[in-house]
Length: 374
Image 1 (cartoon, helix red, strand yellow):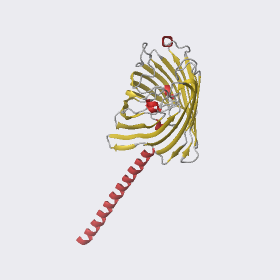
Image 2 (cartoon, one colour; image 1 turned 180 degrees about the vertical axis):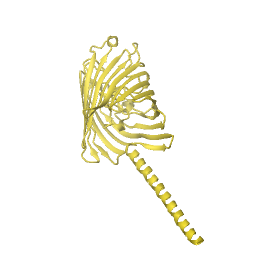
Image 3 (cartoon, rainbow, N blue to C red; image 1 turned 60 degrees about the vertical axis):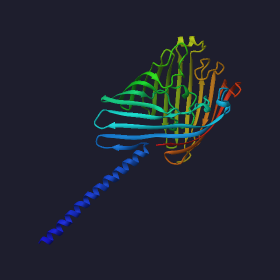
Image 4 (cartoon, rainbow, N blue to C red; image 1 turned 120 degrees about the horizontal axis):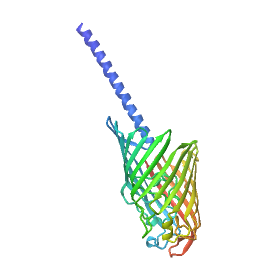
């Protein structure tokens, strides 16, 4: 009898252990599936326990840049340079059961715009952005810290863009600044308002002897409108100039389309102080990116800017109209790794200089880049 009981007990114990093992295997398989899903979304989860979720993302890219008219101030009159264009690590921390999260961006970016000189580009490694996001009540979010602006279309960290270089229009769009933003979300629509005190880079907007760009504010609305991912924004830089813009984008199976339109206007006193003849400038960028197959796409960016004699985009009274085209054939080795080449051309009357300081009407860019985004 004891022998029979021992056999039965052994069988039951084995069955229980087997069931536990099967459950553990299923749990591990689910964890693997969740991890793979997060990787596809560009997010590597370092910790996901009962209390806190910590995720890592970012990217690194490097390339070669050449331009025919770098300007007489170019370092050693060079026209080309290898550049570490982006290096960014984003750390996201989300404590569970608490209404807040943290985002921290460490690294730097040095990608020139079509109107910049690439040989003067070098990344400055620092805290790029860092914000604490609070949700005190449902649908309301408060962000405080070093924030990325909502205004504009192209991403500062260009491994997230379709093109290597930053466009002419995007070269003037606001950059990261210290401040606070309140966002109210309802039915896929976000309404936001931001105030900034200090900027990471304010030299682009400052008017010597008149005023600095430390104080600024931003309001806007974004979301899905008639199937279009849309953002309408207004950005005011303290006593200097203001921006009104709209960005629209739509992605189809084998085609990506986007439009960004901006209107800049000088503050009357700032304009008089600089003896600028025109109050404003407006422009439009069109982005078209057809996919040849799963590996190859050919992004094209077309830009037109009417700046009159405002000198907002290019410091030349003769450059009333600016035209630019950028073509960026891209090969995706994997979902995360790419190789791309780019040709760019900008026309602006007397808007550029050659090595000897002679005025030129155009600038050509050729660049190559390898990047990894995770």
